Length: 172
Image: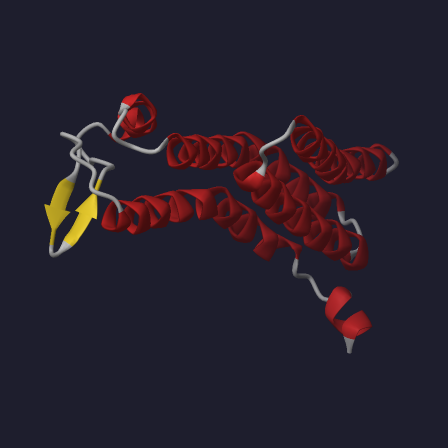
């Protein structure tokens, strides 16, 4: 069954999945703020009460939320640092998404076999998920080096697909 599944044309489904991995840190960021703002007595001017929940992140200028959180001395430094890392993981996911989408489209256009495309897709999704986990939870230089290693290793998969697709097309 596994080989039949890996031989099916599934790699295009990885495009929305990889896009979603870029937004997991955003959801986690919102959750972290809501959980922590409920436990602590923040007197921040940016805290908003909505239906019994307290929010620190505003929707009027959402791109300055992380800066406001980081600069607010009422917000515990560890919470602010974690929110900054979540934002970093999100931005990195957005930066890496185009290369993945193009690699999958190129590989399918060139007619790379489904097994190769699916293994690359699964591995890249796992790599991006591991990258997010490390980035959000890192606290030491060793952990940040591990994050960089996971990022570089993951990047090999779209690069491989792009080169393999180019090689296949150039031989036709």
